[in-house]
Length: 352
Image 1 (tube, helix red, strand yellow):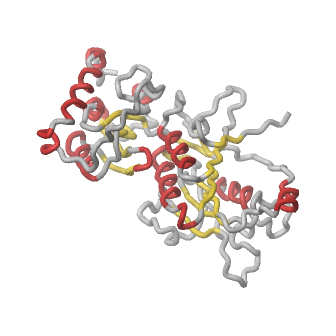
Image 2 (cartoon, one colour; image 1 turned 135 degrees about the vertical axis):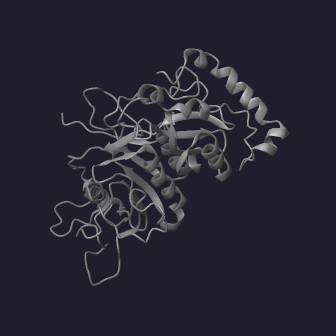
Image 3 (cartoon, helix red, strand yellow; image 1 turned 120 degrees about the vertical axis):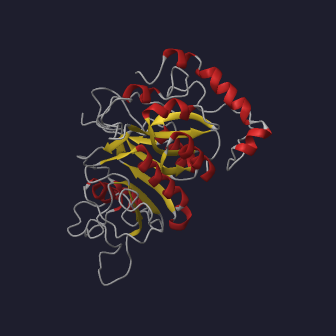
């Protein structure tokens, strides 16, 4: 841990206090413009006394744990970070990061007041002391979960007794994608002569991040897990109708956040979550499936305040019921992010 000195850590709170104090001075406001004025609310920020940062130095514990882990480092010795602000960051904040610490911007995540990108390891401490920055988090890895599920819930009784079959609403499948050619997923009435697509929008931040209007990329799934979840959620059951989804008349919105290997970064997943929130009224998205979890192969201490958890809570507050896999970790009795989000609906099952 040569890039951090214990002495530097011991003065971290003092440095942070001085930086935050200086921020309110008009002279600095003139020298370093910001896109938004920090909130004057007296509410204590999530970053105060958070388990993301147990030693309280403003640098997430997972950064310190994995600072030399080749799973995260690239050939330029940079680490993928979520840079959290005390307000919603904009272009000025990104420019400041790029200028001061060689930040490589990937995503702006307005829903949780953060930006994501890569920072050289030797500039991490500098990044944590920049104006407006309240926390640094490692951009972790999420992977598919619940890949071998078999659903038997007797929902046909619900359809018969209540008439609720998902008609008129849409569910976002935030996963590896959706196979737009699958017989159970390609249209609502299973009649190819009619124009009634089941998948009404598709966004792919993995391979086509700039194509954001929902209609530019034909729905695809290069891994298969997302299509499985889409079928469980809203498949019509075609062609043999032995396996019908829970809400067979619901529309689907595909949001591909995991790659062909079934994994993706926190930042890419949150980019998909943000797109879903931004388009919830356009497509009447009432629910979202996220059968994924983290942190993949890395050792990780999940926190209620992890960035993806905060975004899951954000989605719930925006009126999207989000259903997340508890994961396949029954033996260890652990639920990782984002299933550990306080407001999310986390789903698990036992076979005995």
